[in-house]
Each structure stands twice: as C-alpha cells, then as structure tokens.
Image (tube, rainbow, N blue to C red; front, side, top):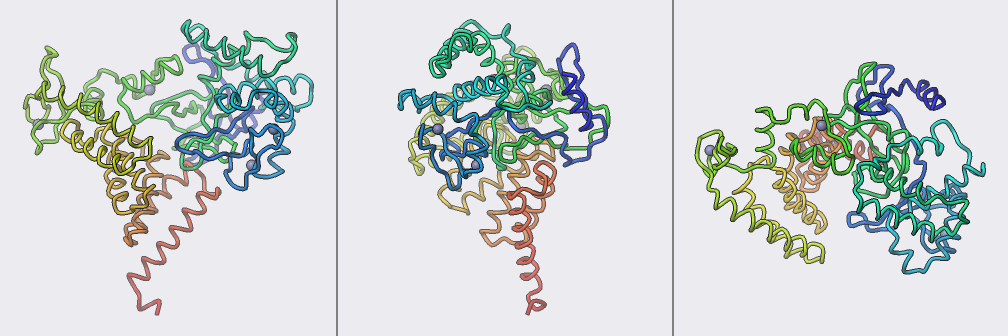
Length: 486
Ligand SMILES: [Zn+2]
Ligand SMILES: [Zn+2]
Ligand SMILES: [Zn+2]
Ligand SMILES: [Zn+2]
C-alpha cells in the first residue's frame, strides 16, 4: 500500500486509517469548489441495460452510438474498434467463456455475475503479467477492500456461494486457478464497493469497481461529489475543502430523513453514519425535519404545519395550530395510497401512460391532503409525472411538474448538488421550449452555477448547456431590444 500512498501524495491526498471508520482519504492541500480531487478508471466494469436506459452500450466507454455486436459471443457491443481493442485482452478470454454458455442463459446473467467474471479474468491476466499494473490499478487494491463478510447473514452467504459456483461453471478453469471462497468474498466486496456508472444526467449505464475511490467515506452532508465521464470516475470538491479535511461523498440518496438515510446505509454498507447531520438524530430540529419530509400535514388546508405524536404516542398534533390529526383518516388515506401506487406503477411499467397519468394525479391529490408540502413522497410522485410528460413531449404539463419539484429540491439538497443543478437545467430547457426566454435564461444560469462545479466545464454535456444558455441569452436580449438588432 506504500506504492498507493506515494501515488496519492503526488495528487495532494493522503490515506489514514481511523479505528471507527477504517481507511479515509484526506486532502493534503486546499481544494476549491469544482476542482477535481481524484479521477480513476475502473479496475473492471460492465455495461447494463435497465428500465431508465434500455439500450445497449459500449462495453468499454458506455456510449450508445454506432454500436456493433461482438460477432463471436453476441453478448457485448462496442462503439468503435478503438474501444474494442482497449477491451480485447479481457474480452478475448471472456468471449470464449461466454460463447460456451447457452444463449438464453447468457442473456439472464446479472450485471454482478458478469462483473465477477471480468474481475476473475482481470486478476488472472494480472498474475500472468499480460495486463500491466500501476500503483492505482492492481488487484491488491481489490484485496484491500472491506468485505463485511461477518455482517452478511447466512441466507446471503449461501447466495454468494451459489453465485461463486456459477462463475466456476462459466469460466471452466482448472481447480488450481479458481478459488470459490475468494469469489464469494468478492461478491460481498462488490455489494458495498462497486459503483453504478451514470451518464451526466445521472441515468445508470453500468457497474464499475473503482478501488481507490472506494476508500472515500460517506457523509450525508458531503463536501465532494462523484460523477462519471464515460468510464472514468471523477470526484470534485462541491465546496472549499481546507487542507487536512477528510474527502467525503454520499453513498445514498441524501434527501430522506435521518432515520431513512441511516437505514439505507446500514442495510447496504453495514455502518452507522455519524456525520454532522446524523449526530443530530432525535434532537428537536431533526424530528421537525423528518416530520416535514416524511410525516403528515395539518388537517386545516390553510395551515402549513406538520404533525407530531403527543407524548403518549397516541395522537397526532399540528405543531403550528395545535389541531389534532384524524388518526382514522390518516390510516385510511395511507392504505388507499398504497393500493393506488401499486396500480399506478403497474400501468406505467406496462406502457399504459394515459392510465398512469390519471393514477399518479390522483395519488398527488391524496398526498397533498396527507403529507406536508415539502414531503419526499409528493416530490417522487411529481418526478414520475414529469418523466411521463417528458416522454410524451407534453412540455407544458412537464414544466408544471418540474416547477413544483424545485422548492422541494432546494430544501432537500445542498445548494451545489448535481440533482438540483439537473432540475434547474430541465426547468430551463422547458421554459425555453415554451417561449419563456427570460425565465429560461434565469434557470439555465442557475443550472450552470451548480453543474460547472459538480460536472466541470469541458464535457460535451456541459458544452451543450453553455451553448443553450448563449442561445437563450441572445434570444432574450433580442426580445428586450429588438430595435438594436434591426
Ligand atoms: Zn466505446
Ligand atoms: Zn465476444
Ligand atoms: Zn449521516
Ligand atoms: Zn395546523
């Protein structure tokens, strides 16, 4: 690990091991907002089709353009011969193995199985010196990752063992070259260390193992953000990071209440977060915030108070006007909402969009009665409606919902969060399409202020934002002073 320490020193970073959190990455100099702290290519990665991004992707760079299928295995795609060549050392071994597996079976292999096949091959190539290593790119870094094997329950352990056996079946290597126990442990490592590779709009493209970036710990109020540029993971400072500060990103959605965030972290990453937000758990402010984000609203539609249970835990009381919440009504609406949500998501997943719109609008109505206006549940419903209207290219309706999400986004995300920047961007694009040029300029400027820090300025995605803003500015000034242009 000394080699890694030296490589990181050259990047003005240091690793320390703290008793309560394990390895931590520290800044060895000041970093300013938007500055790249560290970037890393994956040790192994795999592309993935999913609901949000159903098209095939290049196995190397995750692009969806100009794809050609590998003619031997018919499993992986490449956007160029350059990408195919870059992946060839690994894929030539993978290709032979996958070609021997039944075609239907290959299709059903999960991303984690495919990633593990790749990890085993990469390790072998490294051992045989076919694949060159560097301080920041070698299997020892994978060995150093935490596996949390002792936290995994027996059922999960059995599943990992079965998955390891499947890898053995796919690779068909001699016994001396395969270690089932190590593979099972590596599955456990992937579960808490692999990253979802996303595009600039944070839509998932695949999964990658970035063992150096995995050293970075979590905070629910992070000072840094992880984004991807193609296959490369890039960590940027979201705020000024003074020398000697720990670099922190968020592993989970940070919009939820402290209880929700803690639960997500415990379930997937097996630790109890003690960040500056989480240590406030149970304090008055934290209870208030949770009640607003995930709790109920006052029965009086004119009051924007939120409800808390009284000391006997029997009644819900509005903290603003003192009105009692109707427990039976809350129970009734909650169970109705549950049923409606199931129906709505079924309509949506089977492509019946008009039906889904009606269902989600009814859900929104019920949620407005039940939840506080800043509720996360309400925000999710509006996000879904926004997505459906975007797909239908109904810009007016889409804008209506986009605009409604902004105040909640501004409340639940730090002012420099990529999701907030992307929502401003969406708002700006819709305003422009609807001819609201001046508003579009305002929203696109807000988007740029956030995204130039989280996404840098040089990617094609940011170039597009910059040119959209230029165009909108020109159009707005023409609208304001048409005589000057004439
Ligand atoms: Zn490519
Ligand atoms: Zn192939
Ligand atoms: Zn936390
Ligand atoms: Zn009230």
